[in-house]
Image (cartoon, rainbow, N blue to C red; front, side, top):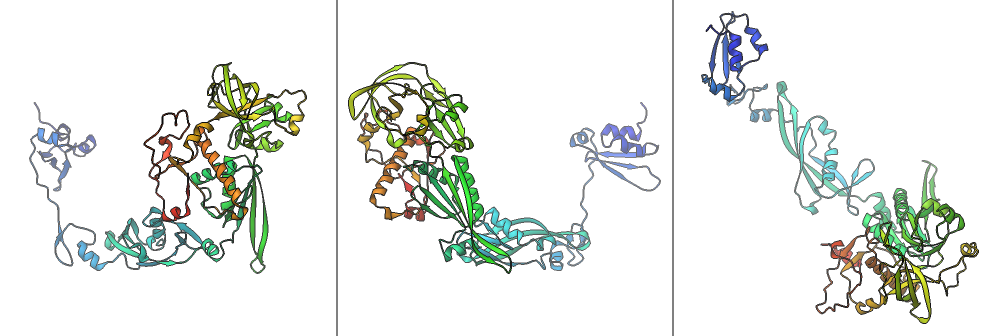
Length: 567
């Protein structure tokens, strides 16, 4: 067996690649001293030179029983104090280097910031106000940006708050920075910046404090109907989406609500929100308040008039002939089952459903034939199912023939067809529209010559008789309400009417899960279930499941004082 060459030995031990071995391939007298510490020492060049190649892996080193070479780390003496240290470009220890060089020199340690105590915002020069809570990510970003010119000289590594008393009007931020100093050495140092808060109200808060009625833009929301059910529903949508957060005042009017804003952009955003949740049309106008000819500036007051469609859920509608034709000869008598930015219409006889978007409705702009305040209560004597169960738009319907009579008049029986065959049974009560005794002067209805009207159209099942047993008992859930100014000069009769309509709205929420799907209902902490509950009291009476309620609702003292929760 011949003598192995240097290249073969290196490749056999795995201490170098073929490219490294080519350096020593021509050296015949190369000597290799191997050791298990992971190094190979080569000596073969004309001048004394050692190649130290680290072997890749302890496993190969142990297998070859190589000689262990002790590893030592070179140290030098500090040129200032003479202590032993690891070498660096400055030849000084960290203590001496910091005593010689201060990288935070020239950086600001005290900064004054403007804080609005009313809206808890901070001034970002020149005129931008930023809302931020104490020790929040937004406030830390704001504080660091105030030192933007200083941080161009150094490299920011870390920033964090140091706790201070909330009433001290002081914010302390600890910054860690790096900078290249003597001969390329990089020094890292921490220092504290103190921010002094000076109270200074922003423009909007100043305007409100000077005159609470001094608004820039107002949104006048109106609906030409005799009830306020739509506004009760919109109020809950506004609260859930926090759409009126920038309103400086909300005032209840006769047929709607007025919202006042300190900025025109906030009013525009609110009008856009209303257009997404209801079929609306709007127009706007502006009035010149003041004009400064020296700097050519104008101050306007903007007014947005928003009108909601008078079509409401559960209304009976007679479609105009052109609309009925465009919808595939639907109706003409249809029921409105849902109102969002579209209007869902259902034919109770054929169970056909169509949708009208906002643009289609306002192009024809028709009204309801009969509204929810004209509902009549009927007793159901007999139900005969005619068709199987159909799923229309997520709701289930069954066509059935019913024998009913008005609760107030049993002298006349009505044989009608209804779409409520899946929930009605003999002995129940239902709410519907009495077309037999109604005196309707509808222009659209007169356009249909020879149209035979049904004697009654049932809309929903009635639970009024069962609710009489639970009248006066609190509900296990509550709703929040807007901080709204109410005109108390209209008398007690109007207040009783509002309470009655609000009670009807709460009953609708209990009966219709789809209606409360987009709303936030909260648990009533004051509710205590009665220990003596009859089985018949809650039989077949709709209620809100506890799983749908939001738990652990915390109210501030201000909200408690304003009574912002209603049962």
